[in-house]
Length: 405
Image 1 (cartoon, rainbow, N blue to C red):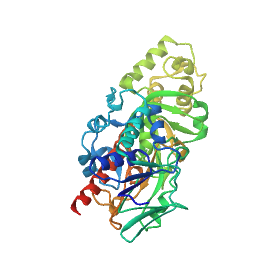
Image 2 (image 1 turned 120 degrees about the horizontal axis):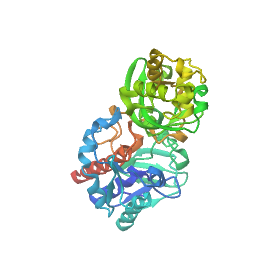
Image 3 (image 1 turned 135 degrees about the horizontal axis):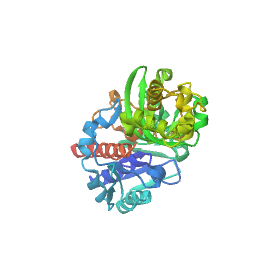
Image 4 (image 1 turned 60 degrees about the vertical axis):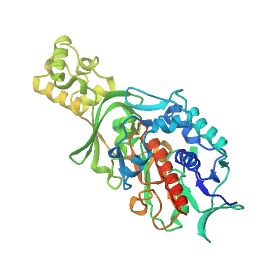
């Protein structure tokens, strides 16, 4: 079966590439999807609401080896992109952009309705077993069908959320072409820590300020809700920090968590007031109106203060040391949770293997987009923005090449 453009993978970047390519005049387009339907992962994003972008997107928001600047600049305004598909958006107070309906199904519907109108073929339940170039055409082969086109966009996603179809197995198609790949690791995921510390905190959700350290250097601070499980720290703020951990040396990293960051330097005076108000009570009872009990017990344990220590016997130096401990609860990094719990993938095709339009330098006509590129970012719509932008950039470059012929 011969087409003008083959898109391997019907996720976010593949769908953006398809509708962009058609709008630019490319006629015969096929989206080859391994699952029984396209866009399955889109439906799961943003807790089913699809945080599709952010009102402030800058190249500095992205990490990895790919230069995202030309791709982002070429894409332009994401609101206009979706309005051209009949989808309107709204933005929350944190700058996160959603479909106006607040339903991820609206995003997928916008793509599928346009693809149906444009005659773009969705070929599902199709697993590509070989990708090769022969006689001026790229061939994407299954066990019984050979799909051919002069151009291919590889948009299969990464390894994160394998239950939604993105298990990274398609990357083998590129490795067989001797295309270099940065080894994949989980990104935007829970971070494993000391189970002895975490077990008493299991189930807690505590707002505060958390900082990732590499040895004694503070790497980044996030503010938000930290969720504690018996093995890991979780929550958006932890997810954002997970992508900055060097997986080759987990033991050099640790978190300091401050559950009272908004109290600032007043914490000592607050503790002194509590000491006076609850003069004959224990240290644990003194903290009960300030901290969740498990967090209070952890801070006291770290300062070697018994939970039943009578606070009337606590001097100001001990108050100061306890305040310092509460502001800097220590959690060592032991590893990252697996791809099953990750929202995205760190790794992929490196920037030195791609040109500014995401075409593989060693294989003309083959483009790589979305999560298959070595690009990662924080939570908040950045990954989906990259998916739309990279898919559109590849389609635009292909249309420009076709116009020159």
